[in-house]
Length: 102
Length: 380
Image 1 (cartoon, each protein chain N blue to C red):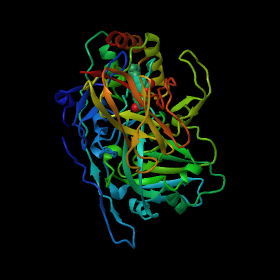
Image 2: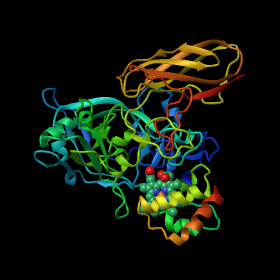
Image 3: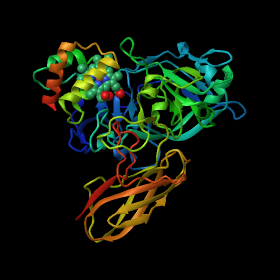
């Protein structure tokens, strides 16, 4: 996947008396698949079901080690701020899993 | 689409205190070279520090990538419109050609830096994207002045701010869209652009094709990508990403402080980096040591760079000046070095007299890091 695969606008230079002509063309890319890799452990399913719709698991896995209370508040922020459709009953499992895999 | 996992052979250590510090390094993203993967979806790609070891311009294939919500992966040029509305005399819907014809074409060399650049190095650690120092880059941006686009619609009396939205929208109903605004006087600056060109090429989709806002000297959170709406406001901006997020304590706090007033992060402070040597690298005992790197003044021109640590305070020589918002190279040579050099760093100061601090001015979101970055070199 090396190299530019976007073939978009060409910035062609015209004479000095007028502005250079800018041409915009259609652009499209194919982003890499997200393998949704999460280490095994109790609560893994709850995280896959509730926390990976909007972002890769690395969002969670790359965080510094934080407390269960902090994971609880992160999950609550996802629901309150970002309207994450998280099953409230799954939160204890999510918290437990995150604390365990960190 | 390629399965990234199969290509994730190589890992890079970002040196984040307490970890996790290893990240995949991959060229698997379209149009990108070797990049550090912070997140596949929405993409968060960091530039490895070695990309800054030569020159001042970050090539498009090495520029960091940051999206808050999923990004559209296709744009139809003929269908794209930029709505100009709010407190304007005549609301408009502009085509890409209308934008390109809105005024003089301007090129600005400016550093694009994430407000959270270096967050992963915060101590105590804070949550959020765990960037090393590679969420920055410097490019030549081409476009028209935002004020020329605004003039087409005519800014109405009472205007206070100009807000931008792009094609990236939340995945859930009621979640905040990533919209950002700047004060009107900043929007009217001669170097604030609606840009389509990045280092002489069309903006890559990952960087906001077809248009993005460029606000030199300000953190890139304001450089809204895939621009689709320009909205003139008459009051404060109470939208989430301005009123609630991307904010810093108004005055320094400690990690134990809970309730404190906050201000929006806006302009960038000065920073400097050693690019010739990584932390822990070897130096030749008894030989002169040539160090070099890059520095930035932030929202003002770079004034000076000094090598500090180990009782040193040595002025560095500055390379060519490519404009107040661009990276500038620095270099310095130490006479014969006999032992390890522990905790040396470079300290930038800008034309406004702002100097990089010795210790981190900690904040709970890890924004606007500009503590002197230090490395240790081992004599061999």
